Amino acid sequence: MYAVKTGSIRFPEFSGVRCLMMPYIQGDPDSVPETYAPYKEIIESVYLKKGDVGFLTIDESPVIAGTSHRGHLAKHGRALHTEVGWRKENGFLQWAWGQGPEVKVDHDVQVLLANNLNNSCALWNAEHPDTSFDGDIGHLAELYPYSDAIFMRAGEVYRIGVLTPHESMPVMHNFNRQFLRIVSSGVHGREEYFTLNPLFSVN
Ligand SMILES: [Fe+2]
Image 1 (cartoon, rainbow, N blue to C red):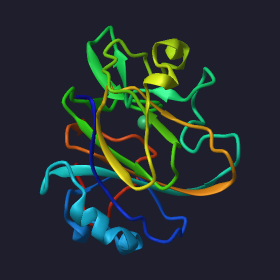
Image 2 (image 1 turned 120 degrees about the vertical axis):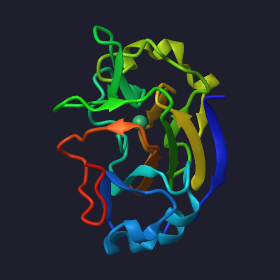
Image 3 (image 1 turned 135 degrees about the vertical axis):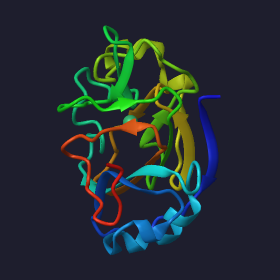
C-alpha cells in the first residue's frame, strides 16, 4: 500500500501561517517556534516516528478558483508529481522541484498529507519509480486517471511514499486552503526555500 489513510485532524482557524520543509522533532511541539502554536496539538499527535527528525510544511494561503494550491511549478497542465525527482545518471532521489544544491532523499522516506478542502488533493495507490528529473509526471497523466484516484477529504491524514503519484487539484471556488505535510527523516541537506528553525537544526 502506497497511500494509506492514517487518521484525521481538525485544522485551526486560518491565519496565513506558513513554513516549508522546516526541520523539527516529530511529535514535539516544543521543537517548533511559537508562530505555529495553533498547530501544537496536530504536531503532538501526527507523526511518522515520534522523536525522529522530521520536516514540517504548513501552507495556509488563498487559492483562486480554477487554480491549484500547490501546483504552480507543474509544466504539463495537471500538477501530478512525486515528492522526489530521480537523478538517473547518479541513481539517487532528490527533493522534487529542487532548484539549488542537491538534496538527497532516502528511498524509504514517508510523507503525511492533510488539507482542509474536500477533493483538492488526489492520490494514487501506486509507486512511480521511473519518475522525472524534478518529480513532475504531468506528461504521463493518462497512467493516472481520476477514476483510479483517492480524493482526500478535509481533515483526512494520508501516508504516502516519496514515489507515490499525487496531484494538487484545481479548486472550484476561491478558498483559504490549509495544507499540512510531515516528511520523515532521511532528507539530506536543504534547499534555499526550506524554512529555518531557530529552535532546531539538523546541520
Ligand atoms: Fe507533493
